Each structure stands twice: as structure tokens, then as C-alpha cells.
Image (tube, rainbow, N blue to C red):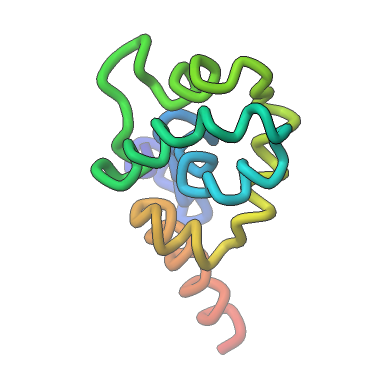
Length: 117
């Protein structure tokens, strides 16, 4: 994509599965924003992300991260819970758990450091 547009200012980053990969990386924070009776549903998702990195969770249309979250936690709302989980997890943990996301942030930081020179 960057080569096609050929503009040094474009640093494309495509988050696989939209923001749900970041939500899966922050299941601890999701537990904090759920009602107590919904928390047991997280066990299956927690087991999943211990074996598969959050950025790679997707076996098909019905097993995409958003579908897994909605299936396990029917009250999950992307626009409500997603930002709370991502903020609650923090950038350092997200970067540690999502290497492609970390690589993009690293590129931005490198540009920022070079701009001050």
C-alpha cells in the first residue's frame, strides 16, 4: 500500500480483526469492566490467547475475535468496552502482546526521534 501511494508520510498499519485483537490482548482489563456474572465467560477466551497470540486469533468468519467476544459475552459492545479495555490495558502490555502493533508504534517512535534531530 505504501509503495502504491509513494508518500513518505504514509505509514500504513492494518490491525487484523479491527480492534478486537487488542481487546483480546487485554482480557484482564475486560474482566474489570464486565458485570460479575459475565466474568466466567472469559475463561474460554483466556485459554485461547494463552495458546494463540491475540493478533492471530481467527479461524474463519465465525471465529474472528469480534465473533468470539460476542459469543462468549453477549453484552460485549465494541464501542463501549473496546476503548475501556485498550486504555485499561495500557500501551506497554499491548505492545508486548501484539508484535505487529508494536512494530508499527516503533516505526512512529523512530520517526518522532528523527524529527527532533
